[in-house]
Length: 175
Image 1 (spheres, rainbow, N blue to C red):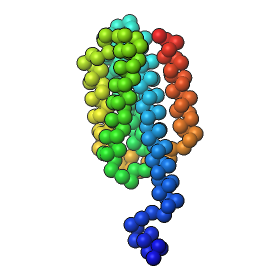
Image 2: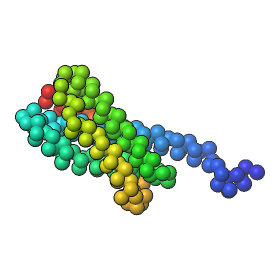
Image 3: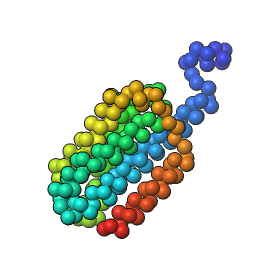
Image 4: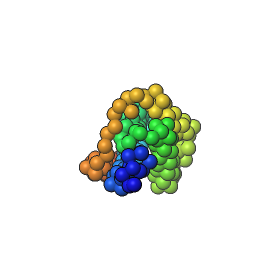
């Protein structure tokens, strides 16, 4: 009886469910760490030009940063299992990206640095761009994303944590 259930494809063996759950958790951690790294990399790239000229900072934010974010979002979408709904996955990635960006902007710039220029219209364009970029990649690069399915490992997560620590140290030495 038990073999028939597995043969009919209605259930996965327990080991497969545990493995899928573990990979799903690793994907979430990978996505959060990748978005945090992208956020702080973007801030480092923008910090010096923006402090000299806000217009130059805004120009870089709308030209150079989409390249960083595009690569990072593609990595998030191509990791883990792509068997599910790719648009749903893209929506989750965009929500994580916007959520972390909003929270980090608020904590770092509005609270810690007491900046009044945080909530400029270009900042909100940047948040909207993250959503458009994730959904656009899922729609236009669907075949490529479905063909590439990278496995998230603990080693990759440790590398991301190391990169994030380096970016934080660099950011706070520039401040």
